Amino acid sequence: MTKTIAWGLTGAGHFLERSFTVFRNLKFENEHIRINTFLSSAAEEVIRMYGLEDELDSISNGDYLEEIFLETKQGKSWPKTGRFLLDKYDALVISPATSNSVSKIAYGTADSLVSNAVSQAVKGGVRVFVVPVDIAGVVISELPFAIDREMCQKCVDCPPRKECPYNAIAEQIELLKCTGCGICKDLCSYGAIKGGPVKLRVRDVDTRNVEIMKDLEGITVLEEPEDIIDAIENL
Ligand SMILES: Cc1cc2nc3c(=O)[nH]c(=O)nc-3n(C[C@H](O)[C@H](O)[C@H](O)COP(=O)(O)O)c2cc1C
Image (cartoon, rainbow, N blue to C red; front, top):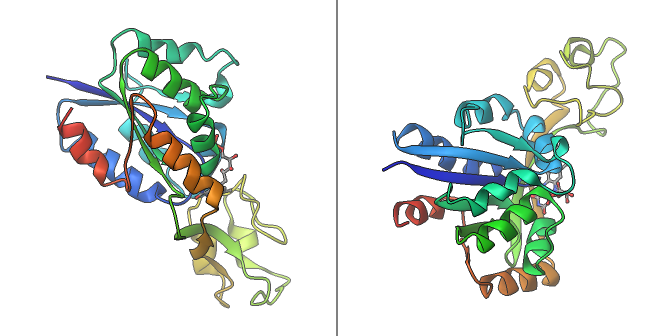
């Protein structure tokens, strides 16, 4: 029997690649899974920065119940989330879930595409799974490409700046133009362009919001993206 999964993506770099790996595997290793994606405005930007736009198009190919719904193309009453009341979905999975979206979900706010999807899913009896990026302790996240200004030699004829197909490089990389293609990284002879790991401390308030979310009806909190596979299999 075909399972239809709604995938809510928020604007987190952390767990992003791993969430994509999980959904890519779900889609291409199972004939009977459809994935309909709901993208927050921040997710739309962040996915581009990490070079994942084309991949998303292959996971949700645009057919009915496999569409990509963009927050930036919606109004403020979120008509697309009405589908959660129509018995169309087997589950809604939010992965990765930013601390911003987690706080909205924890307090029942429904004023963004993803938080509204959660609200409608619970009202429609659709199981919701959330993978928060900030649970507790220290998190190692991945940064998109940036110029290390201490390593940059300010070459007049800067090859990354000249060759960037998106004209995204000035003094810094303009992340809203960057597609994460990585051409610039190889063109800089001084190794001044890099992405890479960054360590950050989870705030108490974010840990508390995750705990609140765990007690909410209809919502299951998962610790990492790979847990989604079992959750979907056991539906
Ligand atoms: C490259 C990049 C990576 C980000 N990664 C994270 C992250 O890992 N966790 C997080 O909570 N916010 C992260 N943010 C910030 C969110 O995108 C921002 O708070 C946004 O308002 C969240 O909106 P949303 O919850 O509607 O997606 C990141 C922003 C950028 C530009």
